[in-house]
Amino acid sequence: MFRRTALAAALALAAAPALAQAPACTPRVADAELVKPRTLVMSTNPTLPPLQFVNAQGQLQGMRIELGTEIARRLCLTPEYVRIEFSAMIPGLAARRWDMINTGIFFTEERARMMQMIRYENNAVAISAARGNPLGIRTQADLAGRTVGVELGGFEERRLREISQTIQGGGGRPINVRTFDNFAVAYQALRAGQVEAVTSIDAVAAEYDQRGDFPRVLHGLFPTPAALAFRSRPLAEEVSRALREMQADGSLKALFDRYGVSVAEGDLGVVGPQ
Figure 1 (tube, one colour):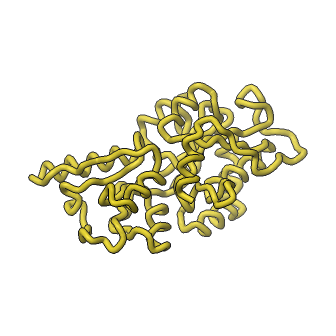
Figure 2 (cartoon, rainbow, N blue to C red; figure 1 turned 180 degrees about the vertical axis):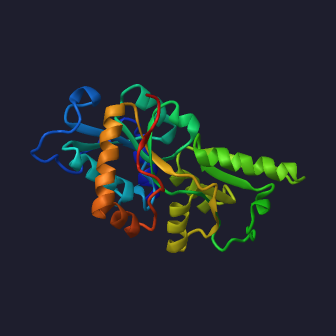
Figure 3 (cartoon, rainbow, N blue to C red; figure 1 turned 180 degrees about the horizontal axis):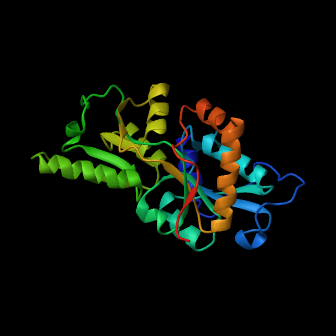
């Protein structure tokens, strides 16, 4: 499955078929705000089970895929997904190759100055160890001198390097940070013994732990909301409205509960340049 996932994510511009057709209603977003008429084009890197992944039949699955499809339905738009590596998502959004980044991008003030963001999901960084945790990793200090894999260019890589700097400041050896195109490849490297641990997010590390693959030895690090991201402010405002509707009717919490994640605190409002 992971080989398929990595291959699918590497097909940078291969848009997945729409998961559902928009109902016969009036779109809540003007075509001028969209990449394609009456369509909500979303980028995702499907390498993060159970939140976003490709099943054995090659179909997109997961909480964030379901969320994006429901948002599109409420906006009376057809959902369409572009499978692409995370490192290309922000440049692609600026270039109008998709309307929305739907990959649980961590919210930062720096990112909110570049694009419209809606904080919707609580998230945090986690560390997965090799099966059986042979190195006995229990604390961040136990990562000193270890080779740790992480997806290139994301919040997780930045925080892993901060951990390494903290360890060095205390007199320990730095972490040997190895970056990969996506998390699926990083976990493949852990399985093959090419790295000694992987930095990912809590829900993903918990999924691998529950499968009996890799124990989640550290979690809850650097708690930060995950966000949806947009170029268009009018589109972001309508998505915010749809999320608030889902929160009011209970469907947002019900969806998140099924996947063991929680809704971010706040009013699901848009933060970004005016």
